[in-house]
Length: 342
Image 1 (spheres, rainbow, N blue to C red):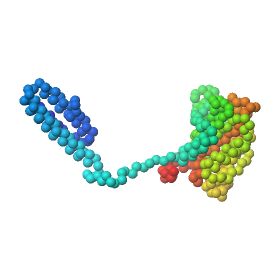
Image 2: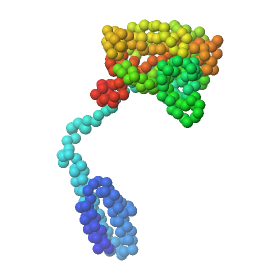
Image 3: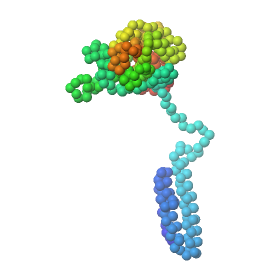
Image 4: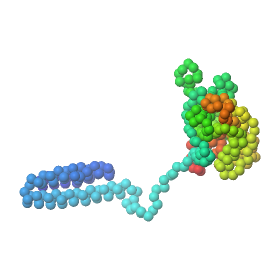
């Protein structure tokens, strides 16, 4: 029995010299020193020995186990020190400086918009980026022959069918959710829909092929343009934290009648003219108007009983005005020098 214990001891000490990392040491220690290890197996055989032999073998076993545990502890400390840059660790020093990420400026403003509209009783909804022709165009009063489709010149996904209407389109605006929301919730209704949209655009300082919009919709009895302008002014003052100079002019959108375009004075150049505002001093910010009766009908709402307003604006442009950013391409550039500012 003594010879077996001595042999185990020598095997363990020889093996410890070859261990190079803490993970291997943990596995090896478990193999020999755990309750189901080699020493535990030897201890089970003591029961068959005489009283004198039990005393002698027990003392040998305990002394050997203590000696090996000290060896394990010594190797563990040695390997731990080898994993550090220095054998001396000053615990009073600051830890490693870890770079922390930050929220994208578009995400910051989108979150603020959602909170702002939620405080006014609007639901915040989400919709699919890959949309059907019906929801993206037809239900919004844009039939197949309508010239407004040429203005958007969109990206289609061919599903393999002969009928082009079975194809899906990468949504060109967040407006399809107007119909989906009306069909699901009916009237009265208040909701905003933020999300990414896609256009076949000529990319420049003020245009990109994919960007973010937020859509707003309010339907109830006796809704008018006064309600629309009040909500828009509340939104703009809430985002810019001050009164913003705006101008309202007639605009055309197939899904509203009458239609409005709301411009704000360019905050990048203070209205003096720059690439962001095409040197006009004004930035076209919001398309809006009263929901067209045909759109209400597609949403399952009686236009004789209810009226409503809708508006849409690019979140990217709102961010540009808020932070005085002069090039929309910076948002998707992946340039950390730009992103770390937020």
